[in-house]
Length: 204
Image (cartoon, rainbow, N blue to C red):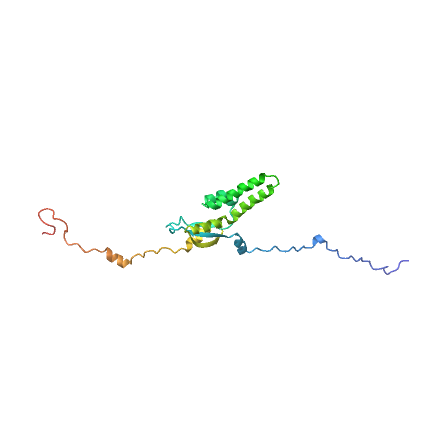
């Protein structure tokens, strides 16, 4: 016997929502710190000493010296040669003696480490303080420390210094009316030169 009413309502299964996987979730990474251009510029700036010779600067400032301050690679690699080249005779001889002593200690058994450290310390010291000693030596010889400029390179330091120098005064051109008055000449009546022929010019 078949019942007129349906046996039951259709059964609907309940499905739980699909959990989000870790790879589907957006990962928030911390944003990198933005470096200020002023901070980067200040790190790359270098000080330049502007030195004027004892007799004063030349007209074209060719003798003006822009001496960078700080570490010198040339002084690190060629210590005593760099000092002699800049006419630092006494310090150059002292450094040469120290390097010779370090070479002797390096060849002696058991003292090679002391020789290596002595030579390395000599090179680093000259590289760090060589330019400072050179600038002080020039000042003792009569050079004048005109200014200290912070710039990216030597060319920029020169542009900053020369742009700050007073410009030569330009001579003003005369007014147009004055120029016209100066250019006017008195009218000439008759011939002013020597007479040619029997009669002078104008019937005289």
